[in-house]
Image (cartoon, rainbow, N blue to C red):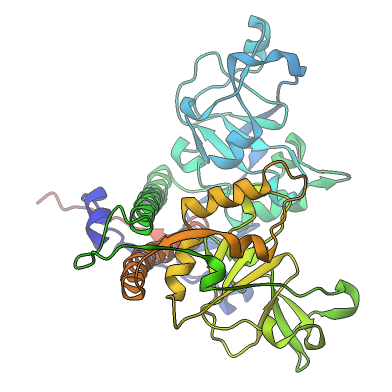
Length: 465
């Protein structure tokens, strides 16, 4: 795992940022008092390095509203910067733009996009999604921008283009953008509101250093995403090969036999309850934790966003046991029906599952529960669910549907071997997921510290000798 990441970043030494000097500035006792560290100053946006400036966005950019056209003009023609392009990409390149619109030469001139232009999302259902920024990092040709975003054209070159990818995402900037927004049926910002936002302007060398540091972390995060995607594809392929017997584990040659899931265990339906009378807001001596379909994330059972149901509504058989397989039995989306997760939570609390869920409880004397869980991840099971739901307006599985699914299965000892192989792959993916999440957390901290001067990237001068 480590070698694959290291190979992608051979130019990054282990001590790449040993010259980063932390200075405790924000959310500290010193920041709340009159004390300011040497080399720093107090400003409208907090304590920052004394050689940094604070400037209004209106003094750095000229704002312009985007293009509005009728639906029939979209689909072909000139590339256009749309809302989601800005929302998803802090740095824009022409390959990121999939939208096209038919325009006159005059419209193209009026709404042109240039290298270094910054775009802000203008309106959304929530204030957290407005004022999200993105900068054009390539020289575009005949490109325009949508009316759902605002263009900020630089008045001068005080901000480096690559620094613009990050400088508008700090909490200091975001809090100003959100507080200046208006909200009626939708959240909205405009050029006047954004012009009043104050931003820090470090010297150009520091801007480049900040952009380089954050860009390196972005590249590491992207490399991890690619590696995780590759590992997931490998796991899916290996799963199908092992569960169909196309690949056999060494030492196993016995023929497989056909069995129904109903021969391997039983499927139970979840708890029916009245949300008003039977749910409470927290754990009590008289409640059981309730899991629903949203608690199955990528085949993993999670305890985020759980409910608490009165235990009088829960039968003994509906209390989850280790190695129970949770199954989504009903959902508005057909793609989610049949998704499954293995229950292995052991935090001391009792858990049950809602009415739109099912629980498949295996007979461990005859089958390996982990192997059966992987059967629920197989292509064969997905096709089986698809056939059950085909032609039905109700996306709903019955316990008898689950129990009727047939599979070829090996001896119990080979089942355990297959489950162990797949479990090892899952463990590797889980470790990569944790590393990716840690990188994301580190970057969030870096953004706050670097963009406020809380950590200064100091590069020592090299002696002429």
